Amino acid sequence: MPSRMGYTGISIVPIIHGMRDGRAGWGRLSRRELLRLGVRAGALAPLATSIILPSAWALGVQKPRPAAAPTASPFYQVDEVLLEAMEKANFRYFWEQANPYTGIVRDRCNATSPDKSDLGSIAATGFGLTALCIGDERGYLGHAAARERVLNAMRFLWKMPNHRGFFYHWANVNTGERLWDSEVSSVDTAILLCGVLTCRQHFQHSEISDLAYEIFNRVDWTWLSEDTRILPHGWTPESGFLQFRWDNYSEMMMMYLLGLGSSSHPLPAETWTAWKRVTFEYDDIRYIGSFAPLFVHQYSQAWFDFRGKRDQYTDYFQNSITATEVHRRFCMDLNSQFSDYSENLWGITASDSARGYVVWGGPPATGPIDGTVVPCAAAGSLPFLPQPAVRVLETMKNRYGQRAWTQYGFVDAFNPLTNWYDSDVVGIDTGISMVMAENARTGYVWNTFMRNPEAVRGMERAGFKKYTPSKPTATD
Image (cartoon, rainbow, N blue to C red; front, side):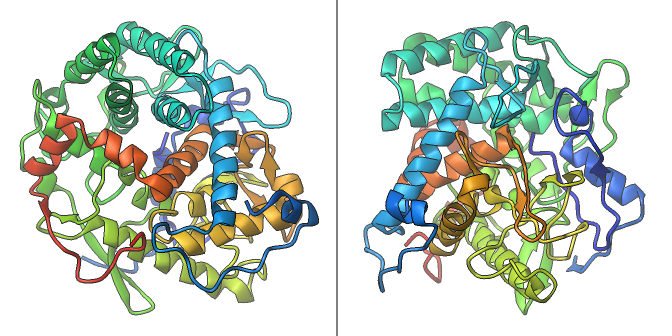
């Protein structure tokens, strides 16, 4: 799931030693639970105020870049070749690592010798449904095969264990049964719903449309917000609502907007203004952020199109451009400690590491940063900084691709300084890479998802208005 936040400011950070996949049980803790461990350890130090062509791959050298990009696209042809290869490899993960009869996607797998773990992620399944739409759109598989897989998934989701329409974070890929006493997760359900709604618009199929409508409208947002405008992270049958709330800017924007857009159990409009938007500053650049890795600026914008829109607080698309640029500068400023970080190789977000799963990033510096780079940090930033981000991916592929590139795309993380390369790929990291690459290239997921009346209604009730940004966005 995306719940993987954590800023510590100093070196205390939750690291799950020796627990690298579902077989060992690392997933018993969500990524946001890892953050809370760090907070309880007293580690926060707030700094806030309130393809390249195949021949080039084989040679391991980077082709000189043209002086100017075509006006019709943010990418050069060599960029498009790389992004196409990455998306196709990412799609293969969602096709092969999902149960074809349930549609549930495995949380992760070893890319060199894929296992058959039963650990499914409901968030990875949301990305997987979106990946089926992209794969059909790009011709990675036949339309009938894509439609059949989506139909199977929709039929299964309708009967899958849930509570008031919300799904359990971890589920058995074969049976849909709850695993590890996991919580009914509000944000993971939101990611799943985004995939469901994308399928409804892409396939324009009567049964898919009906099932998507029923699955979405079954979700009882009023139950989640019964005694609070700040939504809880989840609920368990053993202890009720979790005590932690979605009270700060993060990946949860999609969840609030979906709830606002519901016609059956809508959230009150004031829930959109209830959560905090804290201003951060780095290198004299100000932006709304939180003590969390880079992914919080990406996830909601994988589906919701914030371009040319703003609410009473900000333009969130431009804000993500700014936050990504700040992160790029932060990584470059670390070059004196870690010589691999440069304008051609940057990007740190919650990921695997040589010591286990780590919540790290910055600014402010979070966790035991050691020179590891995380491909989905740059890939998930492609719509915000197209050329700087794709340059990173090309460097990874050209220079380190022999070990950093797999049949499913990039490994989850690697460290050139210590010669450590992950053997795993993670579903949601693969998903954000694929979806944001497609959005940066064509806007397809944005254009498809935003045809849903629930998405439009949610943004309208949150007070979003169209406007002309004062400065061009990175995709202009």
